[in-house]
Length: 460
Image (cartoon, rainbow, N blue to C red; front, side, top):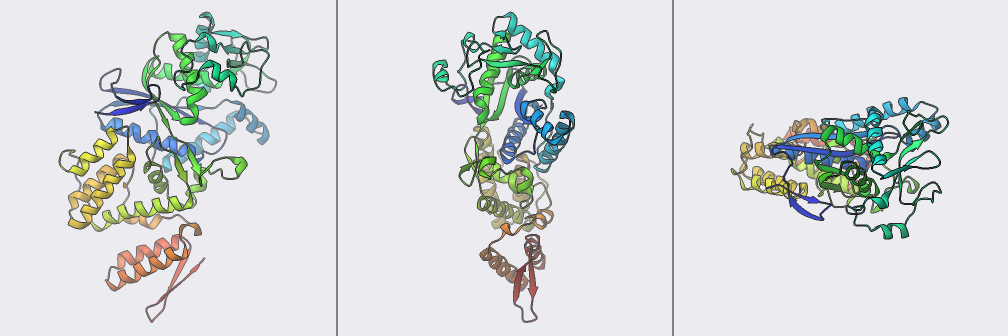
């Protein structure tokens, strides 16, 4: 039976959907003012794998991933660029979808934009006002009164007193309490705004997700996900808004993926280690990045480095070499037919453990290489496909990876690949020799063969 680590309960729990055979899942998406970074890639890929496994498990999944297209950062960036908010967000929504498609992330069932759900947000704010959980401040903002919601802090485990002692936001004289947060921001000159009962303005960030999730999945649904950084305050505030307005449970299972670090340091523009998905894909094949993300359990920390990506590339190459050398039979998946398939299923049923599932793929590849059984390589391809991996023809993948850049090969790696190529030529495996030559060429390494049978190389 599928079990999920529930951040709300701080333990793994059996997955029991509200409606048998169906699963509603909402994941906080992107704020579209810049290109997506590799932290966003982890959210995209991790929850894509979760969605895929729910579907393989027989659930009819409604997957909602929102787009925040109105926000302080968006307004500021549009002003800096001298373009409209609409033009800016349209450009980066297109870029986000391109990045997701390259990472083989399936489109969500719904991809709501915040600006399309203003009426639902106003209705929700009005409900909170009537229930005494929100108030309009002197500056025109409408704020949520945190201390009036008794369950505040249950997701993050933070008490109100601890939060007050460690409060980092600037003290706002118009708030009754520094912990209160904005539901509706009053209009400022030159900024986009919408009419409301409390004057022209625009929504606060937290209210967007409460309104969109309840509209598309109902006021009580199965799974809510996002990055670990959103657990507090964003998801805590969503619970306060939604349960405060509707008077019942909001979400049954909260799922949070772990942080991404760059060379063991926090990713930050100020540190100069901020990497977009597009930066990474200049050097590495998109499937390598997807494999790298899934090779770790979604809740564990993930450390990005060139060395770790190179290792992921070589590991993925190993699986593709198996599919090339043992052409797969077109087989389905019978979980009881092979013990490795059963281990793969048990891993995914144990809180979507892609780390253990990928380990099972290597077991299967090893057995396929030993027995030359096309049914085993067929099973390898089928199981990999569940994770969005191994879906290309081996020759097409091996010729494409890496996509360029000297960072792909050290001198020792180049010499090792040349030696492997020479051995392949001696064995008259010219297809393998050509693939190795093309891999080096893709990494801007040019080989020159002499009439005497030696090979030299140079970077180009």
